Image (cartoon, rainbow, N blue to C red; front, side):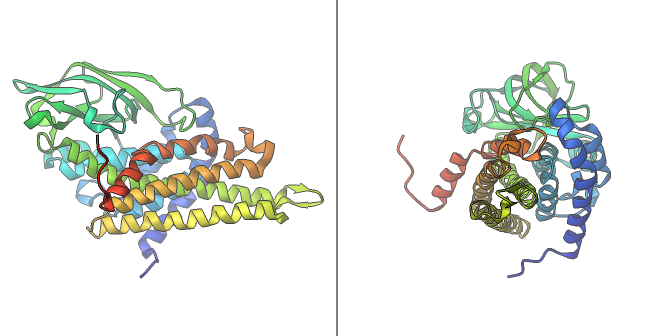
Length: 385
């Protein structure tokens, strides 16, 4: 086994680490407080080519792989999960779907600007009445002449209302497909009949862009179908597997930030005449956080390596996402505890990490869904209805 990153991946990691320290970190607290999408930070990330890491150069990308993208995500999430989830959703979901299933014409029109970071996309899967249960989708798409007509609503859609959002990939029940299966339709931003609701007031990820979408007779040309009719559910499962690996990397970044902030604070803060890092109760917390960070990183790197080697990886993706997200939540909780009263103050980064962490156990498939998928991979009998 070889656990070394390639020279190219190490160079990318170092470059993104410097970018995160110099650009992402200084803006993080302000963007969070204002609940403001960090346009300038995203623009700078685009200039570095971060939105194109896993895509071929032919389509505006950097010719990298999923592992390289995850390495970059970890470095950014060390300082700001809002920027990291913006990048993850734009690349791992929206652009990834177009790359995998789009025609060359669709890739040229939509993927190239996304890979260059000139525009970003959103994947509209979740609905007010159907989150984990993707089969419960009620949004419909029907063909009328040369147009798709979309009706329904979506909830919690990341990147759906930014100034640079170019397209929404809408999963809708296709009345013309066999058994009313799901199809994926590309809807350009600003299309009449699609309304972007107000931004949500969120506990965490406050600087990421998240909206409800409403569709009322929204029309787009027939050629905006992505891939085959009735294959939208299968497409979403493929994209979500990649997304789970990426969210695991994001989780490791947040947990690492908690650890590093806590180690620094434990070395500076004194109680009873010595640094609190000298007390066993604190030292053991930090040791456990270190174990979680290192093992969670191994989990996401294995899943990403399997995917890049074109080997089965869905179960490993669920394992990585489940474990890393729960490590992040635990690390954030313990980081606040190590900081004591200061950890509960917004002047300290760990307070923001604490708010941001919980979403990691929900997005891209809840912890309960991951356990269900992992149990299924063991060949256990399915529960009866």
